[in-house]
Length: 162
Image 1 (cartoon, one colour):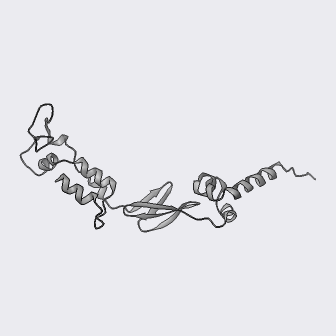
Image 2 (cartoon, one colour; image 1 turned 60 degrees about the horizontal axis):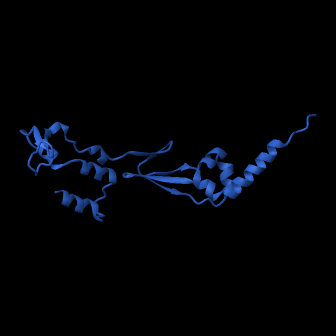
Image 3 (tube, rainbow, N blue to C red; image 1 turned 90 degrees about the horizontal axis):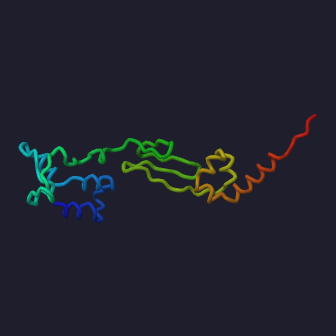
């Protein structure tokens, strides 16, 4: 059974999309748990159900101590959370000055935005948000450097009093 699951879910089977959290949940459950869950009379079973019980190598355990399949991993999402931004499934949005994300049922898919005019970006978003965004700082380093030196010089100007 494990071999078939591995073949079915791990190969490049594009008809069924199983995300890594779902694969981890499947790998967490073994045949002993499935036998316990589908039987009215089994309360104790060896961990490796195909092997003979052994007090040290394959001890018998309570069925309630075996991990169950976490079905939460298959629950459809109604929204995605990226940083401080919430997006509904099927929508896209800017999550930072230079990054956009789309919310899919499998989770968010994000990409960097190409910034054609860094000076427009600086006039649109607060400087501290731009400086925290690595994509912005890489694409607009020349503008940010120039902007920082201009703002530094203007802060040194002393206005005459009348």
